[in-house]
Length: 300
Image 1 (cartoon, rainbow, N blue to C red):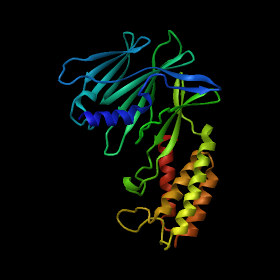
Image 2: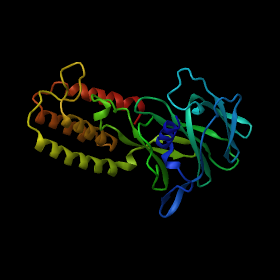
Image 3: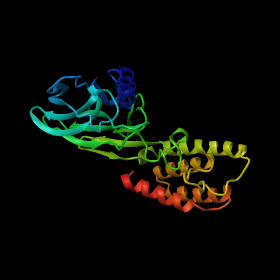
Image 4: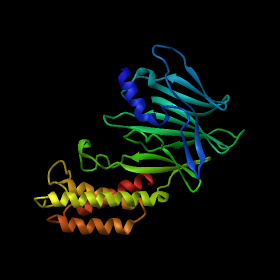
């Protein structure tokens, strides 16, 4: 159990293994870590534990029910009451919570809580709270959609004096492919402001287009080794998986273009290459509809 705990904690809060992490903008730190700890409600205890999270914020850790709980150590199963001094701000429901970080950016303070939400290969999400200025009331900003991977060692980035949190979008993780062969995790960027947490990928347009360039190189390699031409981009069986490696690369390039705001190029290159590299266009329109629906669902 200890090994499992260490693995998941590393995946959820790898960025906060030690104090002092920061992100800089023009050589000045735009956000810095003040404090980071794991969360452990204790095993076999009754009542609740109190965590001093800094700047008047406390977490009351309430032992959670094991019923329907995600796999993980019992000491991580809890509900969390987040208090601003004595005022209750938010009650996070029973789940597995494994760590938090207290951060500062200018006059604003932030608290980030890592949650393991279960699944064989995933998932984690991150809850954010803020105090916009000294003396202001604590507020809940929201949570990320969910990630299948550990965070980068420094997940906070600065662009034009704004702070962004980098995560991995997993909505396409099982898109016509088994997990073991999936390459469809896409970087996603949340803008962290004193009063809001929003997905804003456009400032990272050049990063997405650089990834497109890498995909194009991979496409060239795959095409050189390709010995047969499948009838369609998806198999005509119960799985409806991609018929070959090329199809998944075409879909990933399309999604990257969409994140970069290059919608017209996303669809024109996808249409062109499906027509060019497969025997028929069968299932092409289905994939396009599914991508559009998935992108629309979460506002990315």
